[in-house]
Amino acid sequence: MPAEPELRKQWKTTPIRISGRSRSPCCRVPTFLVQSMEGGFVTRNCSKCGEKDTLPEDVFMEIDLWVECPECRERMNPTMIRRNYGYVCPSCHCEVFLAELIPSWQDIVG
Image (cartoon, rainbow, N blue to C red; front, side):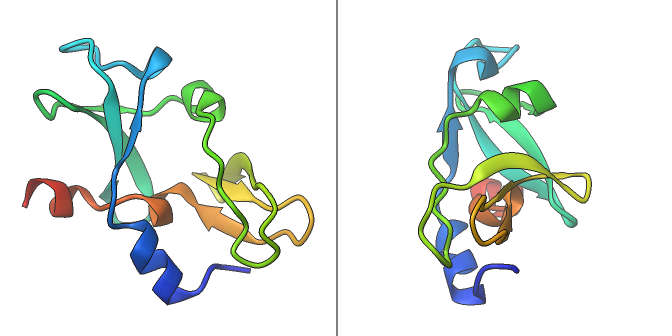
C-alpha cells in the first residue's frame, strides 16, 4: 500500500544527509541522497563538490533512518522493494520507496 501523494511531496523537499561509511570517495565528506533517475534509482552525492556515486546495498541497510509508517505510525524496516531501496512496515505492510523520501537530483542542482 503506497503513501498518499501529498505526503510524498512533503518528503521530497529536503535531502537526507548521511555520514559514516557513506563519506564521499572524492572529498571524504558526508553525502546526501537524491533520486537520480525515474524509476527510483538513488545515488549518494558529495556535499562538497556534488560528485555522484552509487549507494551500495550494505550501506543503505546500515543507514539508521527512522521512517514512520504513514498508516500506523510504526517504524518501518529497510528492505529491497522490486529491485529498489525502500522501507516496509512490519505491522501493516505499507511500502515506501527510498526515492519517495528524497529530492530528485534536478531539484538539487537546478
